[in-house]
Amino acid sequence: MSDLDAFITGLPKAELHLHIEGSLEPELMFALAKRNGVAIPYASVDEVRAAYDFSNLQDFLDIYYAGADVLRTRADFRDLATAYFDRVAADGVVHSEIFFDPQTHTDRGIPFADVIEGLCDGMADAEAKHGITSKLILCFLRHLSEEAAFATLDAAEPWLDRIAGVGLDSSEVGHPPAKFERVFAAARAKGLKLVAHAGEEGPPDYVREALDLLHIDRLDHGNRSLEDPALTARLARTGMTLTVCPLSNVKLCNVPSIDVHPIDRMLELGLRATVNSDDPAYFGGYIGENFRAAAAGRNLDKRQLATLARNSFLGSFLDDAAVADHLAKIDAYVEAHA
Ligand SMILES: Nc1ncnc2[nH]cnc12
Ligand SMILES: [Zn+2]
Image (cartoon, rainbow, N blue to C red; front, top):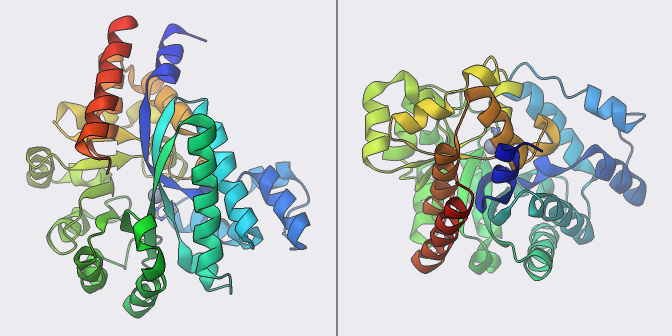
């Protein structure tokens, strides 16, 4: 392993953009299909991986929602979360704020309770086993209705003490943030943090709506903001965190190759950019691979990598004391490995 790769692995980091359903590896998909007697349209793990060739977000989402069908029980959701945490413990992740899509499961008749209790089981195990802390962010599927999002928020009511915030994901173009203005206002009134995918495939105006109508605390992706200098300046001035996902951007053809990814330009523009994996089982790597690919593709140095790691804690929903503690650990790490 190169010196820079070892530096990346040991760098304490938080993951802020991870869809837990997107961490379902083909091996676990097969195991759960067998355990639950669910038929899947693939003969082998290799055949599953070969199907992961996407031209855009919708191509991916079609396969991703189909894959999630093997998740049926509380134990399945626990095993899914445990596999993710076991994997990222080796990447130096010390905190993770994970997205889950309840509608993908409740619409198939899986009780909300089984989804969230299973994920919480895996999160508690990860804290005990690896010392990794975590939070849950409930995402509304934006291709579904506002009414369905309100029903999901209602279903979450008994678990609001286990949910840090709400987010917005799925097919972006044609489903602007404005569609969810009222449900985000209701979530805000409950004291939940607010995040939204915007500017992944959608235009800069969707990012503006996420800021002005949804009042987001954090922006997921946000890449297309760069097309609009006034918007970029606003994001920089207000210290908005962008949860950038380099390998996802390449795999979904939003960026032609990692060599031209704008991660370093984002930092130069003063944006609080972070590096994340999005859907690691589908996009070719976990957070460590995203850091390593971005570092190799854009020639990032240790200073830039440490800034990205610092940003991940600054943009997290941890309390101020925990953030300060993590930042001090990064400073000590950088000093020891300069
Ligand atoms: N990258 C992505 N964009 C929108 N919705 C998603 N759901 C899972 N991954 C997603
Ligand atoms: Zn995402």
